[in-house]
Amino acid sequence: MERQRESLREALKERILIGDGAMGTYLYQLGFPIGVSYEELNVLRPEVIQNVHRLYYEAGARIIETNTYSANLVKLAKYGLEDQMEAINRAGVAIARSAVGEDAFVIGSIGSVRDGKLNNVRTSKVEEAYERQMTALVEAGADGLLLETFYDLKEMKLALSIARKIGDIPVICQFAVEDSGRTRDGVALADAFQQLKKLGADVVGFNCHSGPNGILKAVESIEGPVHLPLSVYPNAGIPDYVDGKYSYSAGAQYFGECARRFADRGVKIIGGCCGTTPEHVAAMAAAIEGYAPQSEAAIQRPKAAVAESAPNQASTAGKFSRTGGDAPQTIVDLVKQRHTVIVELDPPRDLDISRFMAGAAALKAVNADAITMADNSLAVTRMSNLALGALLREQVDITPLVHIAARDRNLIGTQSHMMGLDALGINHVLAVTGDPARFGDLPDSSSVYDLTSFEMIRMIKQLNEGTAFSGKPLKQKANFIVGAAFNPNVKHLDKAVQRLERKVSSGADYIMTQPVYDPELMVRIAEATKNIGVPVFIGIMPLANGRNAEYLHNEVPGIQLSDEVRKRMAGLEGEAGRAEGVRIAQELLDAALPHFNGIYLITPFMYHDMAVQLTRYVWQKTKK
View 1 (cartoon, rainbow, N blue to C red):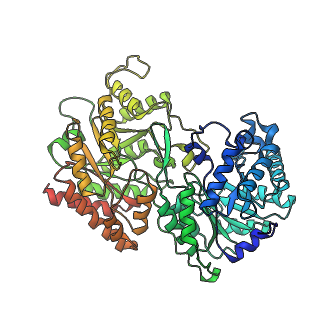
View 2: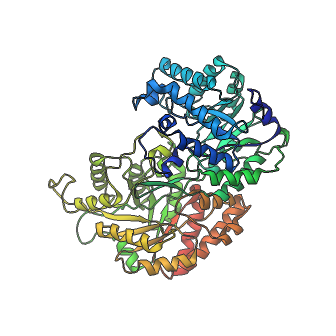
View 3: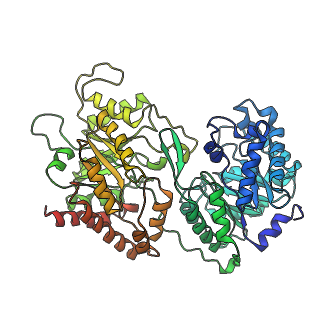
């Protein structure tokens, strides 16, 4: 292939191009630790970077990103490497070219300097960082520039304007967005893309932050034609953080299936971001082989479905008295006597609580025993569950059950939070680690993790002894009932139960599981946990539609659907999807009720009527 600056533009008119996959997370898998400059490896270990490029090329990638995402003056200064900025970027282009020759496009990767923090770096410094990095990449012979993982249109426009001053090189502009259909600074995607088109963008699209499902929704949320090629580089699902290591759940086969869906939506560049590997790229390349791109007029972009969120790990709190023998029974007391239903409702992501409160009232009317609320699950900002818990007690008269995530509060904040819960009489909690902040809607925020979930359980129970986290005595004792989360959807259930036993040893009073969709696994869980000494609430989440089923199965850590369930949900949307989801959940309840008194219903997308139907079903089957 003759390499010239117009080549990429011409290629996109003729065919779909497969991009490569992750560099940073792949280096992490190879044993390079977090906290070092992966870009410095361009000069320290060029053979390692060259091999990664070559693996992606051999897998079918024909757009290869340079290992220069954070190789700007601001980011490199954190490692004392700003003086090597030009050398690192030039080496990045040379290494990629040596790995793939002239048979692929080498694109200079440029990440956001500000990372969504609008005022953390002076504009003059941002402009200098972009100009010098872009100049180094272009002079080294890059076939194009990729502005990726930008959150704000304002910064994207700044970077694109600088690129256009440097030359007529092709520029790809990619946002990392939520499911709102807008950039972080509030601009509708269609409007943002039109503004970028006017500034000279060649390609627009999305990368990072979401898996294929979330990015597909972003594509579908664009209103009207874009009149530019689209590019997508999704993550390999939602990252899981277990025993100090990150892992991603979305497999290569799923990425191959999603590649065709992206192609059907008119996407012209399809690659992978965090967690993706050469296997993912190979599957996408195979899926697209022989695919004939559609004209823009023929492209169908259906209205995006309600954004899926992963089920939140369990929680509990309570409207229970602090004193005396006449105190209402806790959920642990209840579940030892009869079937007990806890229903999860997601706290709202805005200031309108009307739908949440209506759902809670409907569940109260069908005798749900408690409402459980997560603590900013998936690191996505939601309303305080402490505040909602107080409102549930006062206005709905139902027991609130709240999660406490180690991610967001240091030791001081955690004890203060617990003291406030105790003062409100919210005495049931669930201790969870919490998803890392870098993968949520405010990735520039810090993950605290002063405590593990094990330590949090132990220290909360310490408050019940009248002892502060510092060891100082308190004037009275708290009365917390502390739960622990359990993911049974793993290859080795026995090892997961051993980990669970450690939580019980730390003081956990009850267990709540991730959703289970396999009746046989429910039996195995019951058998494996029968001797742990505390009650288990089995998680059941009705599926909302076929896409929701595929998203949960492929992108959410800790959830596996059976082939039968996926087949039953395939292609179903709207009321038909929810009706089938309820039927499947009822069958799961039939399997669960003989083995578990504790039932944990997880409401999808605030469709509380589904949880109402299932709560009624439990009481019909158990004749409460």
